[in-house]
Image 1 (cartoon, rainbow, N blue to C red):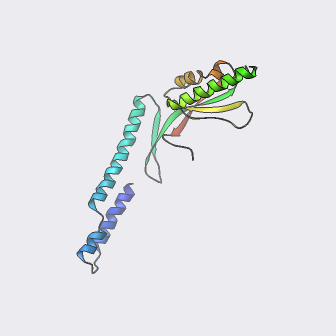
Image 2 (tube, helix red, strand yellow):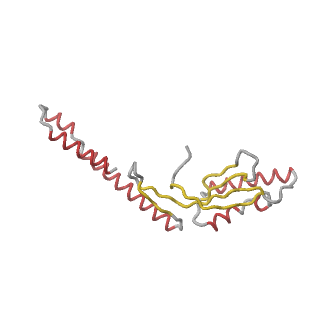
Length: 177
């Protein structure tokens, strides 16, 4: 962003210094509007402040973060620690079809609640029949909280699934494409 501002000022200087036969009106139209330049500067300052305030807000809530400057964009990137729960086949998989159907409904309700209340951001099953059945990425400050929420799942409580939890770093606000 600094390069953009420098480029605007350099362009304004070059345009102002050109010695061509132009009317005053032509010259005024080629010089960047001072209000536009001020808006760009305010936007840059607001972005820097919002990154700092976001980091402070996350820290106040107990989240672990770190940041770095992106070489291409010169933007501050905030990384946050999340917790990825691998939902694995549990030791008790002999429930009858009716019990299994009820557990599945309760399981989906639990995961929907975790998403709706902002505790989990990415949730879904895997498409094969392996031992790892799905994942849930918990957006909470501690592993203990993530474990507690994951273990409230009715499928886990019934022993049909078990949880394997891992800390996972990701850019704050990143989404799937």
